[in-house]
Image (cartoon, rainbow, N blue to C red):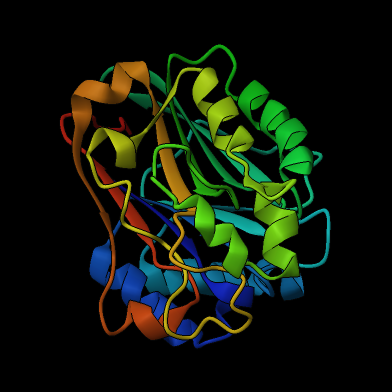
Length: 260
């Protein structure tokens, strides 16, 4: 099975047709969309049309608690249960499936972009939504840095005011959010597959320069899913360079199937 997470920049501001083309080419079985702005307009018309064009039969939207930065989850397989996880500044959709190895929970999330201190309680809410599941996937834009990605501490000197607030405290890089997620037993699939230095932002169209070669988008899995890890990659090509300010991230699990 192929899983994909993609921050599409303000609802596809750089061109939703491009985003659709990226998704269709990768053809994931399960997709997380961050910044699904406008998808909720006119009774979710945007979400329904996006799902149709990309080939997804099942979809859900978690409305953002702030502005319009909604989170969408789309699946080609029928979920047994799906719900919105609240309260969050952005959003989270949690879906449940029956699989060949038992029940599976998939949470599609987007953490607040402001500070690590604000992200930590959001992680508590999201992790709690998957409590009781052994098999679980957590995917989306964490707006946070991993301590395993070997960031040069001197990088802080190049940060603007937004970056300093978002990623540092007292002039030091912070890794609290990712550490907290992993402390709950989640594995960082990029780290497991030795691809954690592949940054996910910015692309060539980044508008405000608040990112500089950073990995902000993650797909975490629980320990029982480790044997199924098959392929991880960040989709970088001429199309994803201009479709959004983030690159999409893909994880394939081999030997795991969702039951109808």
